[in-house]
Amino acid sequence: MSASHDVAVDPDALRSRVDDATAVENLSRLRTLGPLLVVVHVLHVVVFLAFRPDQWLDAASDGRVEVWRLSIAGAHAGAAVFSVLASLRVWRMGSATRAASRRVTELVALVYLLFGALLTGLDQLVTNSISAYLSVSVGVALVTRATTARTLFAYVSAFGALVVFCGLFQSDSAQRLSVWVNGLTATALGVGLAHYANRMTRRRTHQRLVIEAQQRALSEANTRLESEVAERRRAEAELTHLATHDALTGMPNRRAFGQLLEAAVREARLGTPNTVALLDLDFFKRVNDSHGHAQGDEVLRDTARVITEALRTDDHAARLGGEEFGVILRGTSAADAAPLLDTLRVAISEQRWAPAGLRVTTSVGYTELSGDDNLDARAALRRADAALYQAKEDGRDRVVAG
Image (cartoon, rainbow, N blue to C red):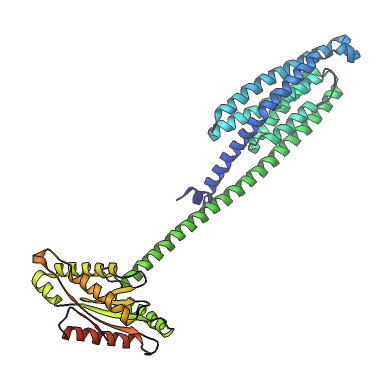
């Protein structure tokens, strides 16, 4: 069973392929965003280290802004280091296993959610804003894909960290409660977005894999069908060849010769002169009786080769059965056919075979197919056969017109 068939019919196999594709997409997004996040964190470090609170805020007198400034810069520095390490790890993973990809993705998501909670906690030194936590919650939801259970674990852990950090850095109970409520809302938003994004990604991947599997299955089916059609055509061509050709000599047989003769008769009726000739090896039975049928077969094969090589490109030749051959000289009148057929007769008689200089001669009877005669194929064969009989009667090894 092929992989495409497994995906198309096996839900477990399809689910496994979807998991693999989702893991690959997670790594791809992390490879793209990792270097960008490093730059963002470094810029934050530069900005916050260059920031002078005594020039901007009156609250600098109690030192809270200074602590906030340095803490934020330190947090981003730590995040930059983590992003570098995570990016290197992701780039080195290559085609990692699904489990390894999932662990790295989930670790990055959890660390960034905790980082967002830490930044929001540190922000409580100067403001009750939760923008950092909200941004990270939405960003993680859009970038990473995980199961609902793992998503809940990461976001609940981050919200727990947010509660702790806000408790440490926000002294105003009303503002602390506001941050917690807003943080819970941001957490719910992140979980919802993450769940929706994961479901949409998996659905899209599922559909793509099913379509690809169906396309592969269709392509395989088409390939098999084309192979079967080609094989059937080869078989049909072989059967056609066997039905129209002589097995011993490879020449067209009597059936094929009849079709060729019908075509030659039609041409003659349209004004093109053609000549049909019948050739019969003289005393061929003596060859079989004296030298065996194997030698007789060799004589027939060699004679067929001589006939084929002696004819012109447009002419036709066939073995009609036994030691009899048929020839159609196209575009040739009886007068022009006589020397051609005599040359063929001589070529056959000049053959020699190993057993004591064995040779054969041939008698030839021919007739012209003319539109004026109104001949059909059978009548033409009868006339040529009568001429052949006359050649035999006249002493054989000769060409006689009919």
